[in-house]
Length: 330
Ligand code: 13P
Ligand code: SF4
Image (cartoon, rainbow, N blue to C red):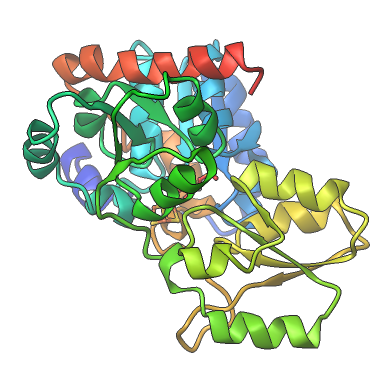
């Protein structure tokens, strides 16, 4: 058995699991015993989505993390999400099934470089997309998610100068929707950047009635083709409310599990990327498995911690986002 340090370095415990165990049952038992809650993002594997207490997009998950009365939050998502939960609930134990579940978008914005970038625009307000490190949030004025970015920018006076980071695609989308001139950081998500316009065009020819629904982290060429643009929750709601029966889904393919569950009579086709794969998985999100989730709740590790001085600064822009969202009923 590894020491705790070794467990944290590897990101998960290489502990053998009794193959006769029913992991769903065991996780349920541990959850009750430890007063733990499982929060999962839509990009998690189907088994994790099915055992979660709450599944949602980044905004919904932050709102849940802020209000839960559980002692332990098991965050089935990626590192920045678990960090956000820790910042909002610093007295709770926050666990991440695989500590190496990172994010290419968060990695595309190193805080020391962003600090310099920010110094070049001293009269600008800094809005950062939640997909960034805790340190970056500590350098921000307001955090946003894909479901409230447009509303948050619109809630500010028209002449307010704004830096938006780290996602240039979401930033460009928000600039277009609001008519504001945002200063953008040049970051992007490895999953949403590689959808193929050519392959989607061919799919649309094969399924002429299908609606293309896309996440705003996609490039503008894809967003221009889309019938609807929204966060993962937005895409799910649109597909559920729409009278249409077929949808081409331009975001990480994990969301299709929930779309299919909620809409058994409809067809969801993953938008193809520009490589040899048929659909687009986030390698970070998919590091978490049901086995790692079980070990993580059983061993209460890996635990996510954030230095106190970062928590104190990062909590303000996140709370500002939650306040604006609550005021606007988001
Ligand atoms: P939302 O769930 O907020 O739409 O974000 C998608 C995403 O990329 C999370 O990493
Ligand atoms: Fe990060 Fe993109 Fe994965 Fe979301 S899908 S966690 S933005 S790499």
